[in-house]
Length: 95
Image (cartoon, rainbow, N blue to C red):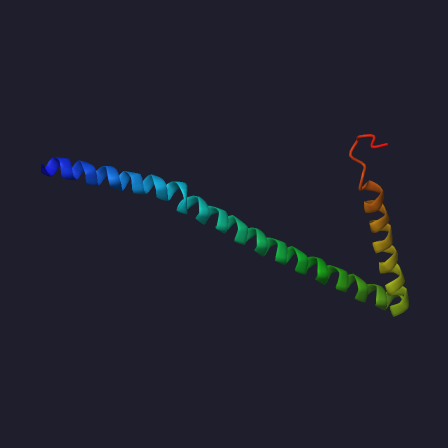
């Protein structure tokens, strides 16, 4: 009788381990990847902001402040125009 009880307990423990592996372990790895991704995106955004601000200050020293605004505005306008031109460029003819 002790062997039957031990077998049932072992099977229940094995079932609990499988359920934990299918749920909790997957969720933990997903949350870890999500938090690392959010941290990386935040650091990348901060780096871009610092880079643009540094570029603006460098341009303000070389030119005037109005010139720096004009140059950065032109850069952003050219980038936006490029993105706008590429928005439907998927290789398919939609017309």
